[in-house]
Image (cartoon, rainbow, N blue to C red):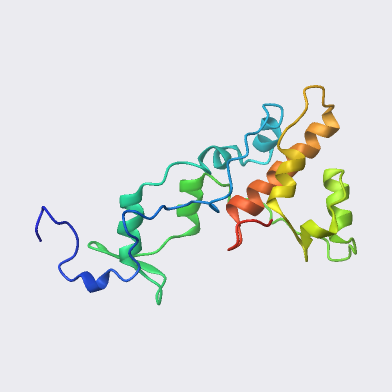
Length: 184
C-alpha cells in the first residue's frame, strides 16, 4: 500500500463509496435542529432522552463513516475489519447514543379505537389538518411550525404539550426517521 494514496490495492471493493465532494447528511437535508426551550429540558430528561438530544445533530466524522461503509457487507449485516468480523449490537447502540434499553416495553392498549387526529389533539392540544396527515404520520414542518417556539408566558400545560411535540419529533424524525425525512 502506498502511504501517499491510502485505500485498498483493489479499488473494485469500494462498491458503496461516496466522493469527497458529496455531503453526508445525518438527517434529511431540509431538516434543521429543533432548538428547545429550557422549560422543556426537564421533560426530555424525565423521558431519559436528554443525552440523545445532545448528540442527535453532532458532526459526522467523514473518514470514519467512509471506512465503515467500505467494510460493511449487506449480505451478512456485518463489518469485515482487519481484526475480524463485527456486528452492531443493541448494547453498542445504547452506549453510543446513550439511549436507555432496560425497563418495560412501551405498549399501546389495542382496545383503544382513537383516530390518529384525535390522538394528536389529545396529546398536543391541536387538531392536525388533513393535508399534513397521511395514514398515521404527520409532516415534520407542521410539527415544527406549531411547536418549535414556546411563548414566554406559557403555562405548565402548554410547556408539557410542547415537550410532547418535541419528544415526538425526536423519536419520530431523528431516532426512527423514514426515508423521506419529512414525516413522523
